[in-house]
Image (cartoon, rainbow, N blue to C red; front, side):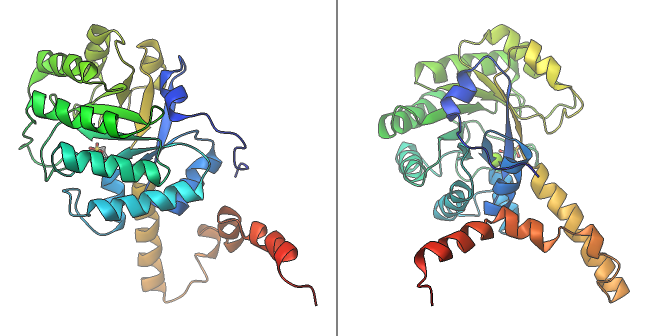
Length: 293
Ligand code: SPV
Ligand code: MG
């Protein structure tokens, strides 16, 4: 476990820099603290992972205020910037700008909005992904840009490939979203290989930084993205899925063995937990603030 990073680079710097940036999924304060200590310099507050942790489907079942509250925990638990998955903005331009403003107030560094309607459905579920009208979605982006400060990063996420519309539609939308003021383009794909996002990146030629989510094309090495000039890779749901596997295995064993004797060395020690949540800081603060008698 690494110590917490002292100074943090802004999300804008991470996304604009020539280096490939990796954003790790977080869905609560604990997963955020773990990602930061592993070395990540930025976080993705994943809609799928946050919804899953709440026991909801990634179909806007969690309200925007619930998402904002979780983001506050993520921000509080770390010193690194957080890009929030804002889904499709929870409605029209007015809902999108309200959510973005509240996220900014709670310390998020940016929001990603996808060009679908409300309620959205996770991009890997089913095949009914209706794209938003381009002009209407540009209004959502403009409203968010006009409502948030200059450091707040607005990422426009293109679902054209997910919805089966092909590269030309994706590129056309990217141009429109850049014109509307987006700071970066997220191109999403459900293919098992990276070909279509690499073709997109080549054609787009970094008119704005490109962000990707290689959940389905997970075999492609990061060097390929570096060579393609991709700005940021989002590992979108892997702490949440690791938690599922870990909790499932431990629950099954404790249930069947009627004992915790055999699993003690397979779960994180309490010392690690206390370290992650900063119990040492509380002890120091007690020394400073509690009366000494
Ligand atoms: C998320 O992490 O919620 C995302 C990525 O939006 S995906 O699940 O691939 O749509
Ligand atoms: Mg999402």
